[in-house]
Image (cartoon, rainbow, N blue to C red; front, side, top):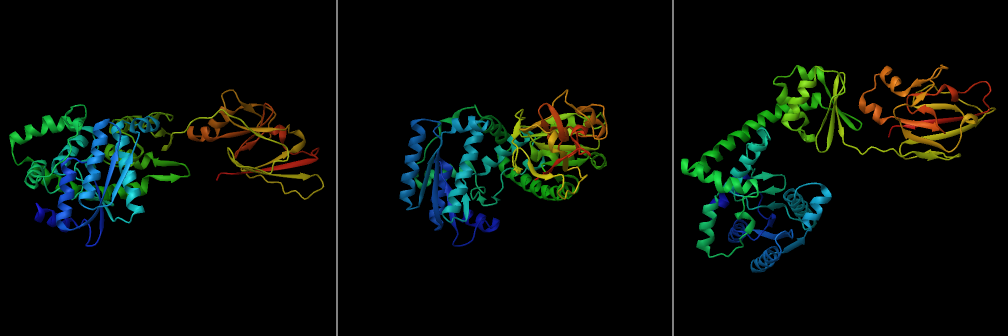
Length: 442
């Protein structure tokens, strides 16, 4: 086992001589074996343990065990407790996912603060195969078929050369004690179901199943590198960032084959599933306006583009502007300048600047979102027009409509901010005081 771990570390270039490694230790068989192997090799390491407070006294017992283990190896010991259930609720994610996120966030914090070069976990070949099947069942695509990588950023898995059985033999031979996690016996979690029911069947079919799958996953990993290079080229060309949204040209997308694979890879980072991808493709020949949602983003099928942006909470709040205000920062940035009739006044026709008759305004002004039924008098017209009809005429996308703010004087709309002023508030020969308002999209 000692020679194998040395060879694996060297072959995969997991770290260099003199590097300090932070070992993530639960107290279970795998992490205890990792500590002993690192000790026997003579490597510098610290030990980090998270108590997620999910198993009562058992969790506290794990923490005490790992603390004693660190003392045994004279290794720096780092410890933290989390109210995992509470944090999971606050983040709107599962307890398992919360524990995973908290664990790795904290490990990275400890690594940086204490000058460790790598973070090591005790994952082995059985874990890798379990992850392979989990990814396969969840439809993660080709990127999930390589299982767990030996190196991923600062994270390393130095036990991927071995199996659960080999680790158990090493533990017994070395007469090492460890902690049993009672939750591992439950079929509540998908990983445990695969471990308890699927892997034994595979072993019965071929006792060398782990080696076979390991070889295949290496080939999948190499194939993914070729695949990823092509996808990245396409992503740079098609997925374009425009302020707070991303756009994909429908015309260019339809020239790709297979379109479903390309689109899935373009939008998966925003949380969209393959099934949603298929639904989006079906909508491409429909009228604009179809919307699709992930947990974090919304995708809109517009006339010529797919538009993607982060989900936002809508606001019905109106923001008031008192007389004499020079600048607003919320909800948008506006700069105000007032002029008397006899002063030098440069009239602007740019859409982001509104030149208005100050005498016709009633303060406080307000800034709000548009709503159905809103109307204004377009510049140069004495007839009112619905804001919704103006949006249609200007070919606004749904996102552009949602982004639109109105400047109001009482109930009257003064300016569709960044687009057009109301005819009733324009400067005329009778104007004695002017106000100029400049909108910045920053």
